[in-house]
Image (tube, rainbow over all chains, first blue to last red; front, side, top):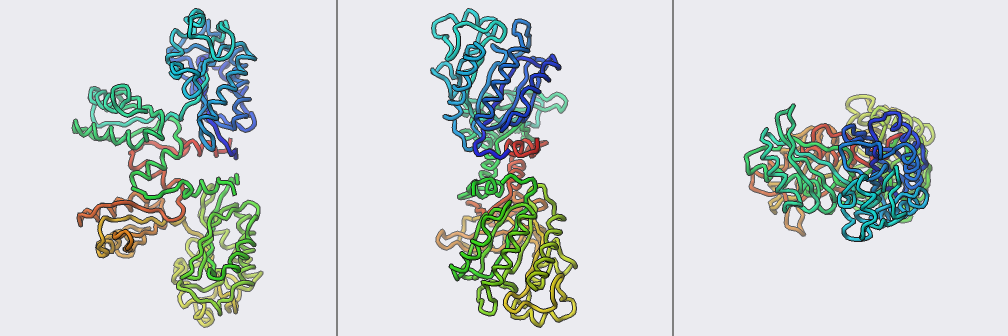
Length: 302
Length: 302
């Protein structure tokens, strides 16, 4: 894939337990020109599958319309149970700018896809995060409150008119939430202690919700088999709250308890730039340019 | 350029001062299929130009044969003066494995190019570093000793039979040295002092030649306009002596004098992997995979 403009999309669909169904869904989105399936992660407890895709804006739109169509046929939320909140067969579809694409373009892409999904399949569409049409709809959890079962009523309430599509849920597919967001980095820091309270205190110090860094979500987790704990973080905007700054803050807070950082763990994918700027920080590089990375130079237009 | 196998080559040619000549030489190697000119760095003091190229093995061979041909026409070493040792119009041409290519392949590529250069242009060819035919020829400086002016005699001496081509220098183009090596990283660490002796002592501690790290060359340099000094390093195998280890050793040695590292400077290009492993080191990542870098995932074969 040698695309000038690359966008990522990570649709979450409400199916994981019926293997044959999941296979048919994934098979239906293979080999769409200018797209690639990066990863498929079914979670059986949640009965939900996270699909990571990359491609050109047009390629992804074509692929995702296929995905909505096949999920409409294969998934009936009236029969669906799982541990994760959901309001749609395709529950949420974010677009993420990766290369030579902007957040504004991704927000527009969300609107274009939303409009087509509503028109073709009569599924109500809510836009979220950077594509949201009003402030309170930025928050996915807020939109999804009440889930599929509650949405038949909720959609009739004032303020809940969808951004596209009918004022009534699709009987089997519910609603869907489409938007644009930054890449998410899931990064866990392991501590040399088995005391979960310490991990929780550090998590509280570094996360936004309790006064910490603006684009960090965090919680303490026990790693029982290793008899240690970790601060499990989601970094929701690595350009504004970089990985190294979050990790250094964990390290500094851990010092408070005389606890060492014994390792760390990246879950899933990370944009190259987030690692380049980490190296730049620790090596104290002056005037580093991304075009000094050999591979970037190769990918530039001649 | 979307190539499965990417090799770099950095020919050094003995011309920089005659702008029109240099322009004709560079123009002659533009637009060779499956190649890209990454950088052209003329040095007027040295009267020497370093050309950075990347491409497929076949593309590069085609380009480099053109380069040898045009340099043969444009450069006459009998008229050449400059501050850098040289024995050829095209003085040295290394191949460097970058992506899905091995050092062994690059050494073979050096032999193939060497054989063709000798056959077509009657220029004697010496193979160096990983392409060397005998131990003592690994060292470029050793091969080049005596330079163009001394080579007419030297080539007749026992042990100096070239690897390819005639036992006599080309009258205007001399000889050429072709080989395979690791990417070179030029990395300078700036110190918060104006005392050049301190930079020299640290350089001595970290460089291979005086007992330091195996793949580090280093010297102290004064940055007069900033009134500080730097340890200027060449890292000749970043896989075996990584950037972070060399920088941390400089930092530790600087501590000895109570001198802080105030910044650092990357000159030219660096392979992405060298920065990824720097981030991995400082973040103490466990089980990090290069395939977790989003852009790498995109470049993988589907």
